[in-house]
Image (tube, rainbow, N blue to C red; front, top):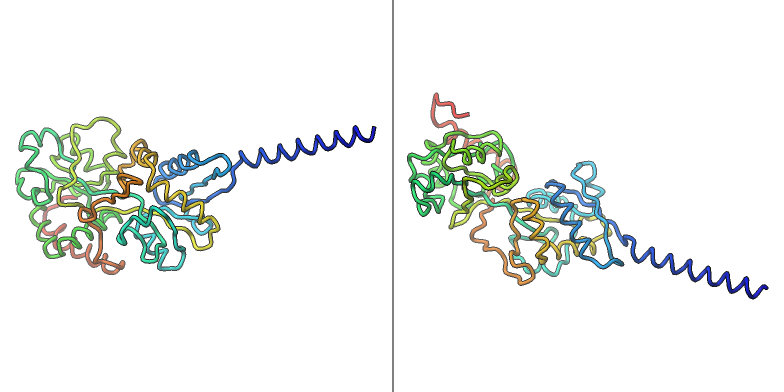
Length: 334
């Protein structure tokens, strides 16, 4: 009788241990907290697809938050390059050891590899198709073509209203030189029908024909309009200002390995590139061919390389307001 009880206990113990092992193997092995200043749906979808791509025994759960209060407790931060640079300078980020990040040039990584650029958002021209047919598509290919269209009506955001537009101006001036850039805008200024307050306005006006050409962001076009447009996106052939977005691992995080896996997956995986398209983010990957390793052409990506601090940016925007935006005394273009 005792032998039967002993055998029964042993069997139950084996089954119990096997059940615990099974639960452990199929359950989440680790959890990662992500703070982002980007669209939570986009970041959440990237994290979800990466987790789905992993074997059951190494599944990771991600918690994505855009609440500022959650930033210090996060394992990683996904944001614009300016914020990542600021956090790195404050010592908040740690070095990232990523296989695929090694394919990126120094311009797309922090100086100590403590942040990695994942994708970018280019400034674009949104050209009304009726206007394009009228003047010829080949007549609008470059930034330098805009002043030539003296009958065109152009709309763009006011360049001092938000970080994106300020960085657009800083990138243009970094590329051209401030004097040359301001000279360019003096030529374009008489063609500006409206300096818009909201990002949606230039897109809407170009689509409806209230303007012929809008200067906007690729993300704005994809974000605000879901259907086929009577306008098309043009990235000027010589290059364009871009907003860079990337990721950094917080200094106090113990999940560096898990975050590095996410970084490698976003950089190399075609699934990640599909997420950028299906969520209509408008963002473009810095490794457009994934694990083939061909990096986007850096010469076509204009960034702010000259105006390094907030004081310099404030002076630049003040100069632009005085010399360009308000150059027509008595004319109200608000």
